[in-house]
Structures are given as structure tokens and as C-alpha cells.
Length: 272
Image (tube, rainbow, N blue to C red; front, side, top):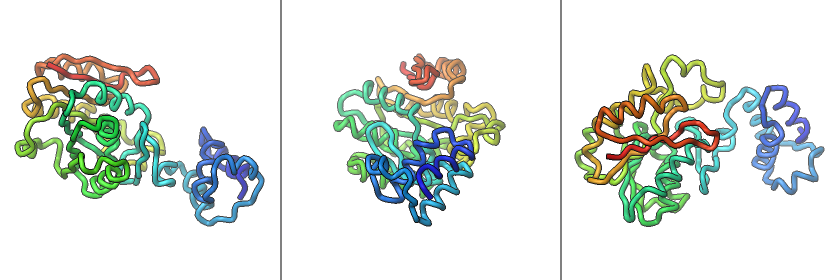
């Protein structure tokens, strides 16, 4: 199977970036660089692993899971079906955390998943420490591996707990920031998402009937775990700014909305 043949297979399966993805698959499974691939477009790569990877991608199985890793912000993360795939839109959340956290801050990342938000923040803020919380043990194991790989393992504690039942916070003390990229898709819409998203963990997508379940709980029940000048940072859906702002105001917070690189509302900054 040649690079050009892989491109055609992916194109026929309606993979939008077929040439770029073909290059990533060939380079990953054949152990060559993109520069080396440039002179090998017509070389027949005899690899069972590569053929199987192409077949899976043609079924719209996520490229990130096939490769087993993905780049986010300035770091690289291991990803599996136990973790949501890190996306560029979420980098805005990290940028704001890096900018707004006070010196020597301690923050908590609720629904941490792969750990990408907490880890990339810590990687840029050597003065900070954090706790990452997730409901699933396998997910936390991957987050731990990612923390070690990216050099922040000693500054990130990981805890298995249900974010919707915040009593576990009683033993953790106060935090300068509560940060979260929680599930925020309406339950009825989860089944209508793209084929790629159907392979990602449902628990990381389903935000309840109106998509706001996690915001309501965190804003109303976690405020007491913030320091006097503590604040919250959330990733939100592109159409949820007004609803999250309303929840914020009802609980005594001001709310500022920041847009992502595509111009969509993406991050809510809640402060007293």
C-alpha cells in the first residue's frame, strides 16, 4: 500500500484531511519522517499494522486513538478510548489559566480526563501545584502517565471522585482556582454527534438534559472551596454563554466570556 493509495482510500471514506492523515499514519507505523516520506510517495509499504490502521480510519475511528498520542498546547499526550481527545479549542482554557493564576497558586481540575488542561498549565507555570479529579480509574492512570511524561508528576495529585458529589473536597483545603472542561453536550444530542465522537467516552460528553448539569453543581457547591480571591474557569459550548452567565450571577459570581480561535464562545471566567 503506497502513500498515494492510502490518500485515495481515506478520501473515498470522506476523511477531510486525507493527505495529512495518510502522512501521519505512514510515518507513525513505518518509522520514517515526513521529509523521508516526500521521496517515497510511490513506495509500497508492506505493513500489516499500517493496513489495519488505514482500515480503522476509513471507518472513522479517531486518528488520535489509532496513533495513541496527540499534541496539545506545547505537550504530547497519550490518548485512548478512556479519555476525551484533546482539542485546540481547549487551549484557550489553558492560556487563561496560565495568565490568571496568582504566583504559587494551587488549583483543581475537575473532570481531568487525559490531564491535558492541568498538565499543560503546570508545564508553563512551574510555581503552581494542582489536583486532577476524575470518576474513572483507567482515565486517571493515563493522566498520571501523561503527567510523568510531561515532567509535572510531582506537582499534580490525582483523585478518583464523582464531581457531582463534592463532599470529597472537604479534605482538600482551599484552591486559588477551580478549572474544568466538563461534559456539556445535551443528552439528546450525544447520539447525533459525528462518527468520530461516537468512539469517545460518553461520560465525558453527556452534560445532562440541557448540557448544564456540571456547571450548576460546580458553581453552586464548590464556591466555598475557593480562597478569598479564588475564581473558576470553564470550557463551555459555543451556544452556552448566556446560560452559564446566568448560573454564575445567581450564585454571586461575575462572568466574562472568552472566544476560541474560531471566534466561538469557549471559556467562562467566574470571579467575585
